[in-house]
Amino acid sequence: MRLRGKTAIITGASSGIGEAAARRFAREGANVILSGRRVNLLDGLAEDIRANGRLAEYIAGDVTNPEHFPALTELALATTGRLDIAFNNAGIMGEETPVEDMSAENWMSVISTNLTSAFYAAKSQIPALKSQSGGSLIFTSSFVGHAIGLPGMGAYAASKAGLIGLVQVLAVELGASGIRVNALLPGGTRTGMLASGAEAAIASLHALKRMADPEEIASAALFLASDESRFMTGSAMTVDGGNSITKS
Ligand SMILES: NC(=O)c1ccc[n+]([C@@H]2O[C@H](COP(=O)([O-])OP(=O)(O)OC[C@H]3O[C@@H](n4cnc5c(N)ncnc54)[C@H](OP(=O)(O)O)[C@@H]3O)[C@@H](O)[C@H]2O)c1
Image (cartoon, rainbow, N blue to C red):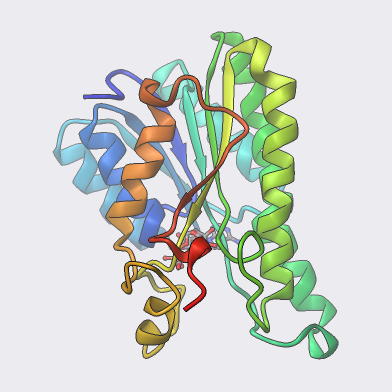
């Protein structure tokens, strides 16, 4: 019960890594505030979590909408009186296109979903964390744009690298307030984000020669959310099956 009595916001909770983290955080005692656009998936997940005795509420909304994050924070405060953790995890890959052929619409869509949303998230979450003298902010970045340049992923790589810069600044701005801020960098993970049929090629990029299950990334998010990582802030934590050190 590493998160007993804590309240966590989790974005991208309707599937994949976010869904696995919501289930895991709740099993560890957290009450969870869920975000995504697919309302039926959020509803089913919240039902499952409530059936196991934790509070679970959700707002179906778009992370590119500046009003979505204040609404999530207000829901956390209204239902549980606190906010301790935010796993800002929602993201999209966008078009796989070389930069010279990439549409400006794709660039803007990926940057606003993956990076500008993090700015909105932090702005709304920081005052709530400050008011109770601390907490943990986690942003899902990627091995793409950190250790590896993958062709066709210019917007995605830029957005995920940008998150690491934002995390470093937030960590120094908020450290004295007891707020820790870290980036989580998963390797290839079996979720709906990756095209089916690409598994063997993606697995080969990793030293472990396999992809992760979402639960393995959720375990790392739990570590960053919990007091077990209490001396970690400003980190870009790879959980990548050795992807970043593999050249063969
Ligand atoms: N899978 C990988 O190999 C991998 C590797 C490194 C990093 N990541 C990162 O991990 C995070 C989670 O991805 P995943 O692999 O778990 O894929 P996923 O199953 O496709 O999950 C993406 C989540 O983001 C939400 N989302 C996307 N756009 C949104 C928007 N505009 N507004 C609100 N929610 C939005 C989706 O919810 P709705 O569709 O319901 O809105 C969904 O819950 C992403 O940031 C991704 O970049 C993934």
